[in-house]
Length: 88
Figure 1 (tube, rainbow, N blue to C red):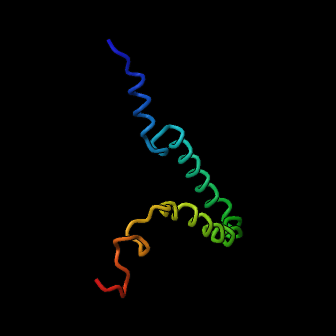
Figure 2: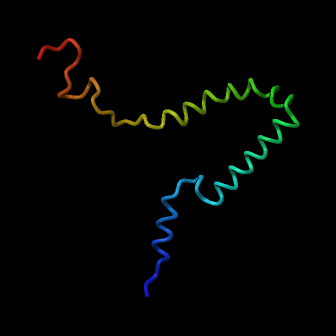
Figure 3: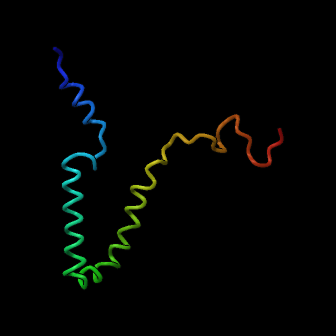
């Protein structure tokens, strides 16, 4: 008989956050809150909507620019990559 506890912990570590029980509970709570707000507090949501649109700008920069690192490949400053206008 051998121990599977290490294998189980490695498998759980590879799961994305939304596939865990806490992630599913958080998504369910968020969905219930969105449903409640959309049914009973529409005017409050519409009052806050312009601020939510402004909040999208920093959130997009935070999450969508995550792939921009310092290790760009194929840039014009790298040796071996001809620049536009260079003669071979």
